[in-house]
Image 1 (tube, rainbow, N blue to C red):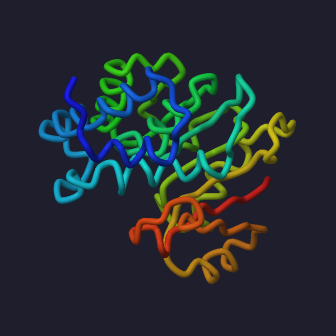
Image 2 (image 1 turned 90 degrees about the vertical axis):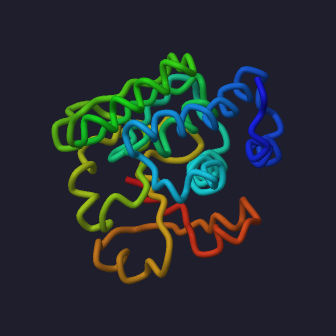
Length: 213
């Protein structure tokens, strides 16, 4: 397999990846362009920046969480083409991931890519968050809507018992000035600058927004 050189960006920030994980991350550089040409899940102008703007951005949640107990359950709401769920499922192979989206063709792409990578810890569903009746340790998402609208969809889907060093809650990837949005949502939230994890200019105004629930 010929490596896409930009995958080295992932390897530089995550030096302890196994050979299997490295191969899975490397294959994303072939799989996404192939599937995106059939079903558009990523802006075509972003495809050259797949590893920076989509894969590494998703993995900021992994930097925040650092280590997870095997069997931890994570729900990715509005996953689109599989972000942040697919990169996180590669990073945490002992964690169970459920990815949901209301657009069926996007879930088709997620399933095909997960199958091609051999991800045994990921399942994808064509459904809305409100339809889910299971409980999860963490709920993740990439800015699918304003925080005040998102929280009611998922707040009753978080397990009460913590099993990790980080308390159960919501991990939301979003950029810009978020103070007003947090105030509007009337929640306790922590802002963690992604620029503390990754040095690229793209992350200067982007955050992992953590809401312990």
